[in-house]
Length: 145
Image 1: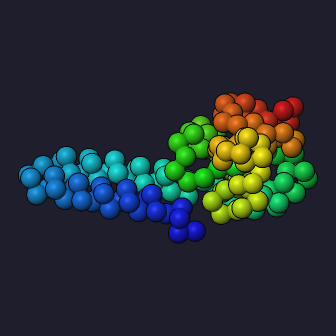
Image 2 (image 1 turned 60 degrees about the vertical axis):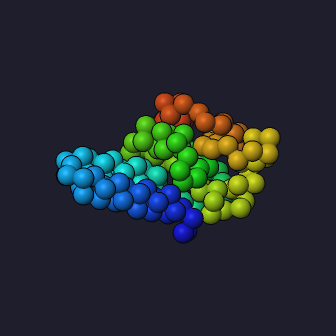
C-alpha cells in the first residue's frame, strides 16, 4: 500500500518546499498557486481517485458473472489517470486491479503485452485491450456493448 503513496507524498513535499521558497521571496500569490498545482498533481496520482482495487482472480470471477470489463492499472500512470478521469462516474462500474498490489494481475498484463507491464490493459470478455479509448470502454458498459 505504501508504494502507491510515494509519488503523491513526494509531490506534496516538493510543492511545499517550492511554495515556501516563493513565499519567502515575497510572492505569496505564486506560492499559493504552486502549492495548489502540486496538491492537484498529488491527488491525481494518488490511489484516491481510483475505485477500490481487487485481486485479479476476484475481478475475473466478477467479470464472468456480470460481464463488466476488468481494468489493470498502476498509480502514477498518466494513461490510467486519463482513462479514469474520462470515464467519470462510470469508472465505478468496472473492476479495477492495481498491478503493484497483485502479482497475478501483473502477470496477466505481462502475458497480454509481450512481457511488458503496459497499463491500462482492459479485459473485455477475456480479451485484452491495451490503452483503449475511454469512449470505447464506456460503450462496453452499455447493455448492447
